[in-house]
Amino acid sequence: MPSHPVDEARDFLARHPEVTSIDLLISDLNGVMRGKRIPRDNLEKAFEHGINLPASVFALDILGNTVEATGLGLDTGDGDRVCRPVPGTLMPTPWLRDGRQAQLLMTMEDSNGGPYPVDPRQLLAGVLERLKREGLTPVVAVEMEFYLVDRSRNELGMVQPPCSPATGERATHSQLYSISELDEYADFLEEVHTAAETQALPLDTALKECAPGQFEINLIHCDDALAACDSAVLLKRLIKGIALRHGFEATFMAKPYGDEAGNGTHVHISLLDESGHNVFAAEDGDPLGTPRLKQAVAGLLAMMPASMALFAPNLNSFRRFQPGLYVPMAPTWGFDNRSVAVRIPSGPNAARRLEHRVAGADANPYLLVATLLAAIEHGLHQQMTPPPAITGNAYDQVAPSLTNSWSQALDLLKESKALTEALGPQFLRVFLANRRAERDQAMQAVSKLEYDWYLRHV
Image (cartoon, rainbow, N blue to C red):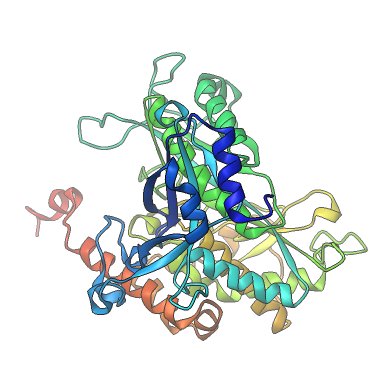
């Protein structure tokens, strides 16, 4: 790593004379990348002095409109804050403009030069700092599912699976773990992997998921949770960009098809102590781990109902929570069991970890991981005890209890003292105002289904 921040810019420009402009990116509350594009001659200045962006970037809804109820817009004059580069994230974007484009992640400061409390990345950094003071380092891996869809809509104006680049046929079956379907989309997947290598994104496996056109590309675990989430948001951008080059659209929307599996984000977490020992790995090899693993699980289960607005941040998110499609409907846990909300995967004892399976792929990775780590921290501090681990099909044993109501999820989050303390009252106030405003707008839209069902019959 260069000794001075501006050296990173100089080294990059020297190695990439072909790059003519750089996108400076920051993740909003929805995980949408916002920012500015600068010419290469301004890159060193951006490293030395940062760039200005309005704090209202975190007041934007999914359509890019400022939600004034957040208090970050005109009430405060819509003022600027300084954003600083995230070291190590300056990389080419080979799928854009024939490789003449690059990108750099930014993070926002408050007016005193400290972390801006509504910036999702800064929020996660604060949770990590608390764990660091306790001698704990999370090891995190983020797994996201996505769909490739045809850029043309069907006769009803709805999305549809793409036609196979190899056969020209439109997929109609699930073909879970199909190698032949990976072969059919090999050119797309190969370009994703090549671009990820260029950007130093630690890709692991690619697999064909449950539904037509659905895939999952996993990232390797990392003992820097901020870097793990940086990789997740950048991988989303990369997949979307390369899909367009191949004639598809890629979507991380939680439920693109009402009758098919949704897109989830699964997060794997273990904790290392100051000597690098995994505190979840039991000396006797117990597959359910140590008392600290059980405390972590208990914290996640206890805070799960109040966390749903962060796991499922929009109207479409809640359509994913339907029975029979491998989506957890209640706070449950178990060993090597994909019907539970928190799974303890099988594998070597030294790699004992938990896998959180509730969130959709539309969740902001920084906010998601911050929430999970805060819940784990809560379970450890309170030395909580989880209910008995589930064996067998959790759906048959535990009634659904996690809310599938966007409004109720926001109410539960507002009422949670533990999450208010963990994430900060200022962040929570802005997040709730932002999400409530988007919900209010969504409720004004009348769907085709409502006309079909009710217009003539009631």
